[in-house]
Length: 255
Image (cartoon, rainbow, N blue to C red):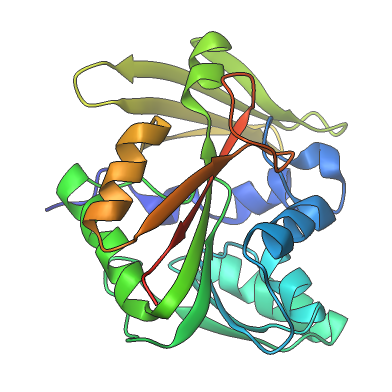
């Protein structure tokens, strides 16, 4: 199956320019990052120093660095060479030990290697549905018996309630802008977006697609992939409600 969009053209240096500055305000609206993400992940996954953790679709490594600094043995996998270069440079500068691997989440090379898997900041749902299900099965294979997965995604009820067809996602004091125009496909459950990046006085456009999930649907997918228990939380770590902006699923394999 062909990819739904050009991921390399989406997750590039322009993305880092707008979303990877130290300021929390640079994050896309509604996302949970920084120490808040590390603390929530630590608590919901019952993380401890020495556990092997896979940060799947780790991006530029912010969460991976923070979990490694707390004592976990972290591997970060991502398909973007630009992101991995940034992640390795930041890890070296901070003195954190993270193994970064270039790879595709559709073809994970590990079997029963990790105690925990983290998939953060809506880093799931970018393929056709059959392939998305295969990704979940691959995660189950990469985990040891009793292993756990935490996934952070848009919370569908809140996302739809706040939906607008276009918005400025990021703006900088130097005049650079990143603007998205959206279209919802009710038959596929996909959000189709056209992104316009204005930087240094020049504009370029790219497109991306992501699948939107309600909790019951993704819970059932995870159970079909081999997980025995699936719980849902909001960005504050309490039981998921329609008002939460983020949906964090925590799934556990049988022991």
